[in-house]
Length: 173
Image 1 (cartoon, rainbow, N blue to C red):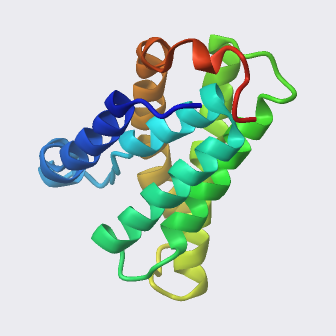
Image 2: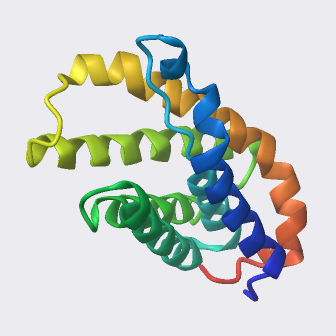
């Protein structure tokens, strides 16, 4: 698959928007006990993995995860590992399933949950967080996955048009 410059520009724009404008709309900013992380660029990487294949998604996830590690995390490798692995899993799922809107939504839901659990697991393993799993599940995981899943479902069709016919022939799987 030939990577389109518009796709790279979209990912760059989403990384900028996630870090500058979207935190102003997070519920924790308004005193809510719920925490939310906007991971729209990662959702686009998952959609790239679904549409273009698991290997392409893996490399996009690895690079974006490394970028997140450098910009937002104090540790290199947690996001790179999580994003690369879950993007690969998202693309791998479509070797067995037909790509329909409902299946794309189910796969997005599953891999978003797996990604957040991977990151939380690493943070708990190395004692960078002391939050119990129940608090993480109710106050962080549910709102984060809900907003990112909604974005993914809204962005699926426009991204399919942006990627074009390269996604239809299964190139990159």
